[in-house]
Length: 177
Image (cartoon, rainbow, N blue to C red; front, side, top):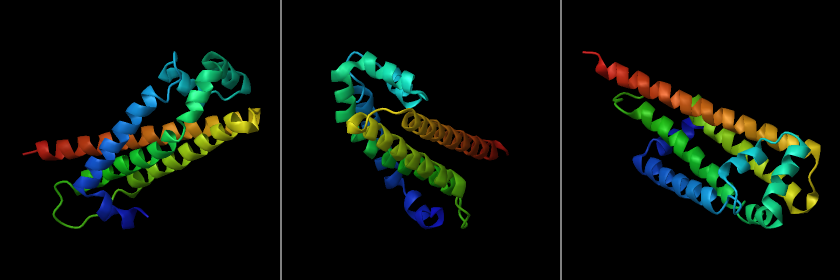
């Protein structure tokens, strides 16, 4: 997949447009996606609840109105994974392509990691939607959603660290006389 997407992802316009889309969606999620009177930390607490009790405690803090607001904006969190996956994968492709004159192998792992994170984000969102919709909160679903969220954040962190390592290596290569 990474090999076929590489020519598209390494384009400047894809990087810029996906970055703008990711920033806009992130801003929307941070404002309208956070229940009134709450903070973004409570959304992370819900994502990483791991137990039914912790999950219910966040919902109780939000109240009915806050939970309804979160549910009403969950559709934004179905768009966001696409935007951040394209942006991070495009950034990896651009870093690999920058300064190269000869054909080179794309950084397949760095391109694939954000897509794995996005898939896990969809699993987490779907489990939250199932529980908060009409399915009801259950310990196994809370655990599954939290594991998906934790793995998603781990893949995003690995991607960012990999990009930073690549950028630093590229910078240091160009600093040598």
